[in-house]
Length: 286
Ligand code: NAI
Image (cartoon, rainbow, N blue to C red):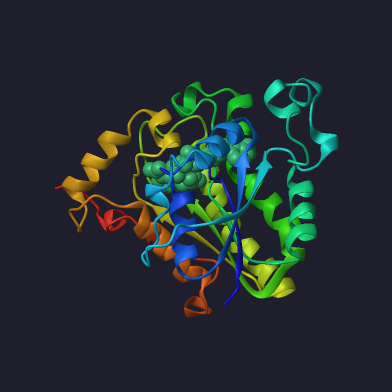
């Protein structure tokens, strides 16, 4: 039906962002992605060289097309916020218009409006450190990249979203239960993201008729998760303890995102939807 989706946080074919893009593409949406500036080059090159072709195959046999890839750094809202060292950094200097405000403006110029906004990004420079050993700088960086980035994306994209549209972010159960190893203030960042989901659902619902939900996903061996260092343990733990004893596929999260973005979910907003084989419901490991 010609819906347009902007998915922030796609830089390879292993993460949730890619899987969400595929499920939305399979449902007929036009796909725009926002890729972290330092990862842009390798992502575009790999895509061009066909490295992702196998993972681009949709259920009908066609290949997912990405209408446009936008460089994005979601920790900067507008050019005035970018410090000199980043501006002149080799990896950044080669791209332009990658602050959140500029990306929204460029998408507006290119496509006029969108229907679906997906936030599938997180970053915590001190994620491997326990909270008690996390610096103020590391904690605030986690919140900036992983939580405020969503506030900022919505703030700048809502004015170009069609009423009835939908927005989705990705969260993790470490926001509400103790998950040792998910450090650096990342658990705090996810708690903020989930709380903000409710307030943003109210504000975006009233002003723009846009729904705002977050998916609390189970463990996936993405690039970001491998950097945390305990992903294999979390996958094994889920296999041993969840109600559904199977490995979670990124596609299952993608399909839930497609549902939440669709009119089938027209009364669902402000929700944390668990897509984790039911692990969140367990009170004790067995
Ligand atoms: P991923 O590595 O595929 O995605 C993270 C993306 O964020 C990367 O593409 C990275 O380039 C991008 N990024 C980092 N800093 C950025 C910035 N400042 N501006 C723009 N982009 C930036 O990994 P994954 O795991 O698929 O992560 C997607 C979301 O899913 C994240 O919010 C993550 O916390 C969440 N999640 C992941 C789980 C897992 O086990 N992998 C479990 C539950 C939630």
